[in-house]
Amino acid sequence: EQRTVPFEVSAPGTVEPIRAVAVTAQVSGLVTGVRFREGDLVEAGQVLVEIDPRPYRNALQQAEASLARDLIQLDNARRQVERYQGLAQSEYITSEQYETLKTNAAALAATIQSDSAAVSNARRNLDNTTIRAPISGRTGSLLIKEGNLVRAQGGEPLVLVNQIRPILIRFAVPASFLPTIRARRGDELVVKAVPGQDSTELVGRLLFVDNAVDTTTGTILLKGQFANADGMLWPGQF
Image (cartoon, rainbow, N blue to C red; front, top):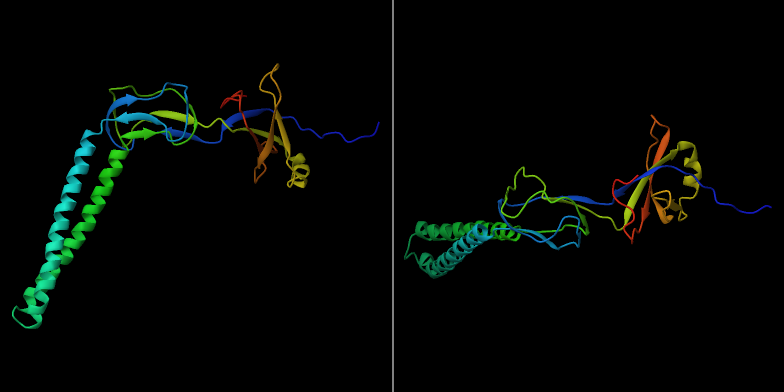
């Protein structure tokens, strides 16, 4: 019988997440709450850990108060410049006095910029006391507990989040198959995976072909993407 048959290449592969993020603290402080359990599926933006916000809230209030004070002083300095402009033109005050008023207003304007930056930085620090999931995925082992002190600089990751939907499987095939693969670059090449001996065959698509052949093994690295809706594929799985 003469008919078209699929051309298949078999190779062992390893599952890897598309993205893996080590969640760390951006500010130092005491952990007041952990809002997930180890191994939970979390969504991007979901609250994971809370750090005591009181020191950072106080710093924000102090920065806002400094900004408000300097804004009042700047407004007063500008009114003085406008008020004395005519007097300076009429020579009721010296030009040096008028220039001093202008310099004071300009200095206060620069101070306002510094104050605004301080408020922005203090607000960002306060926001960072609530640590959220940067991506959707499954959490790993929790490396801190409620009541622990975490540090922003050089601190250990709090938890690792792996994206598992969709997910990748990387595998290498002999470089002799590369011309055949490249000839079908415009096609949706099917990649099938069998996690275990009695497992159901999963169907994905070829996502990536490496840009160089491994000269040591004479193989080319490929990656297939799978929806993994049922979570059968696990990062690191062979």
